[in-house]
View 1 (cartoon, one colour):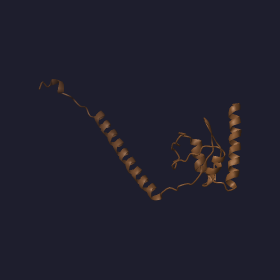
View 2 (cartoon, rainbow, N blue to C red):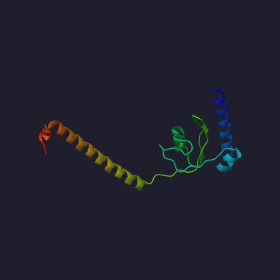
View 3 (cartoon, rainbow, N blue to C red):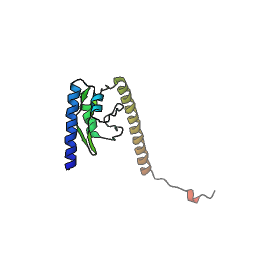
View 4 (cartoon, one colour):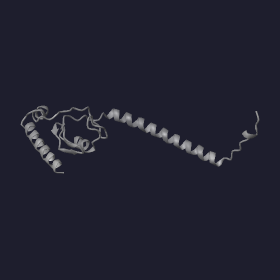
Length: 140
């Protein structure tokens, strides 16, 4: 617990120093490099996605989506350490692509519901219908 608190204080110190450097005009990449911190760029993230090299980190994803574009995000505590991040840019959703995906999803969901209803109807029909099998009496 003591080690974790020391690490938190050090991370907060890095966070404040980086914010000051960035506000003074140093690029985020240069500020991170000057602090001897490794910088990893990611592909655009999705809210329920996995972050490369970090895995599924819901607190980090929430903070990243809540941070303004071109700003330094808050210090995020994770199970195995702390994360400092810079939100380079946010990519807005493509409205046309969203509506196409929504229509496709509605169509697939409707087909699934139809199939489920049909299977339920068939099952009920089989349960209600007495079926007599004479297969045991046939010799050929």
